Length: 118
Image (cartoon, rainbow, N blue to C red; front, side, top):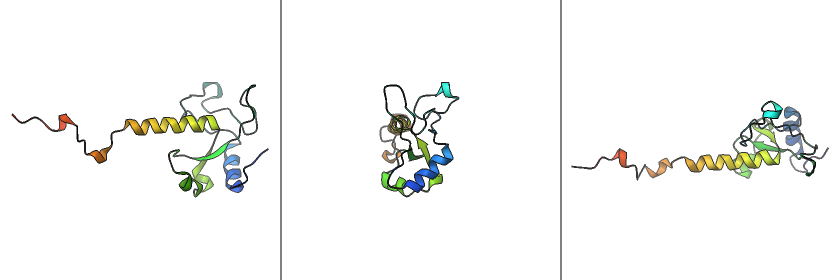
């Protein structure tokens, strides 16, 4: 079974806690119905007959966190994710962040908050 060269001890602790199985429960947009709500991909197993083995990564819960900050997290703050779930969950988190209004703008164009004078 392959392991990363850097941070192997942290990665191993995360994988052992996850049972060497992806811990995505639908954050990627896939409800994983066929596997009781959790991604079925396991480290070292083939994802499909046309793809190679899955290499799980130790990822932070907040996928929008910088790589530098994520590298400083302890194993307890990380979870095992397959590349597909990690990438799809990151994209979903980015979309959700873009959809929220920026409160720093002070609702500059919120017409309902500023009634017209008569």
